[in-house]
Image 1 (tube, rainbow, N blue to C red):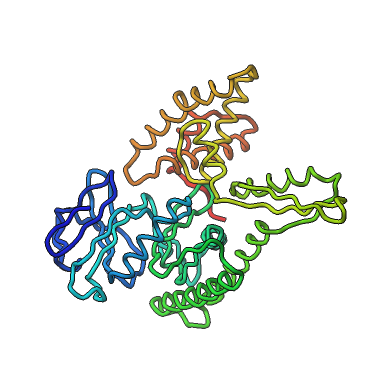
Image 2 (cartoon, helix red, strand yellow):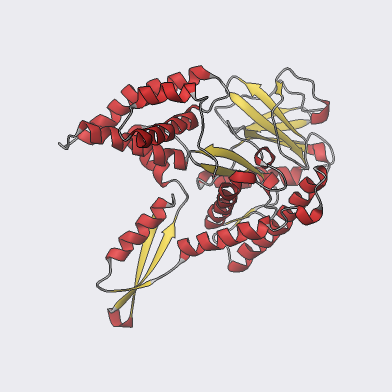
Length: 400
């Protein structure tokens, strides 16, 4: 902790000390060369982005109590591996009155290649990305509720988005109204859903008004759609089926189904029923990190969940082409794939342009290679696919 007259600055190790920023002045009066102009969603608080050697950081100004809650909840979510921004620093005592907007500030790590919901909007709704958006948002709520987080102010604007292979990843941004519990009751979960439905409807009404769209044509039922998707996914995770004593293979099927959804399975509880003739199966699911964890264990490569799923397919494809099965072969070919295939292509992706997410671009290329190979009736190879991908304008995953 670094103590400076009039304010207290707490910063986590591995990040700048931020002492060169003028914390005695409100953010809207800042005039610093470190400030960078980046797209941002709607926020009730002033947010500035600052650039350092270690990366880009978001600084949000807000009252002391809200800043502390935001920081503490985000820290706990980070420990639990939940999809939320990473808190880096907290600034206190910027104003004698802790209830004023400029009395404190929160520093978080900027999420590279992220964007706000408005950047996906087309017309009054979410266009061809609508289903991806709603599924991702429902999944975010499920993940937060799984680790005991009651959001309290869930909305599209309080969320960041990233392309994740053929899907979208959602990341919680504002936690100033959130609270952590050991587990959430059904009542707490439903209350969070009701808040979300109202907030989303209000946000869509605002967007319609800004664009001159009649309120009857605004997508006011969007929140209800998210809630339906949430309840279906929650039921999939928390269902406790009863199986016969000769149907234990269904346990593996259930675990596999949850893994395919991206969820880790942390625990399986088997409870005998009917004198042992049947078993009730209760699964404890973790976060949606199954494929990304597996990819990192095999190769050391870090990616988002669905990116990792597709990159793993590329690794398995590479191993299948080698056609060997002796002990240690998979570990060896994992290294060969990373050194000889993955890293060189990633370098070429980075050389294309700084605005391109290299991991996402690699997934775009893999999808492009698959489509072109299917059209040709044979494997066209990565090099030919890369050349054709560049010539085609570096297309990403086609919209639905």
